[in-house]
Amino acid sequence: MINSWLKTAVVAACVALGGCADGAKIVQQHDTGGIVIYPFKEVQGPMLSSFRKDALDLMKEKCGGRSYSIVREGETKGRTRVVSPLDGAPETVEERRWGIEFECK
Image (tube, rainbow, N blue to C red; front, side):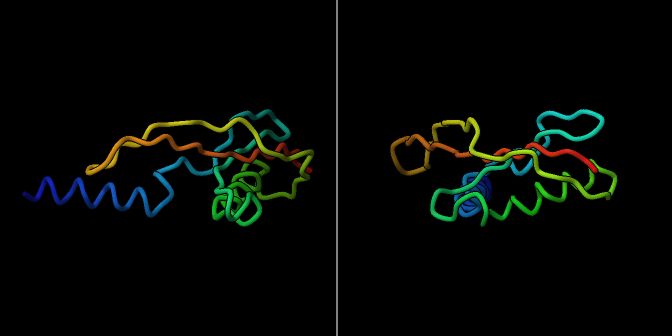
């Protein structure tokens, strides 16, 4: 009984948090910068995504707390996955991602 309740709670939390999508992460790096990506929802767009601040924090951390400049940014390859709700038919979810290439100053 508790196991069933726990599964339901985890699924509900994942749905509420945007499908348990990965947050911001550095996918490519070198000595003076790199590329960071983060997921966003179409309704809010990439600039208002809660993960944008995390991406900017990662860039600052990579640059040792120094400033950085954004070389370019734009939508990058996302991913498609199948979600199987407990009480319904599986559905396909497309996750969109935003990429930022940056250089440390």
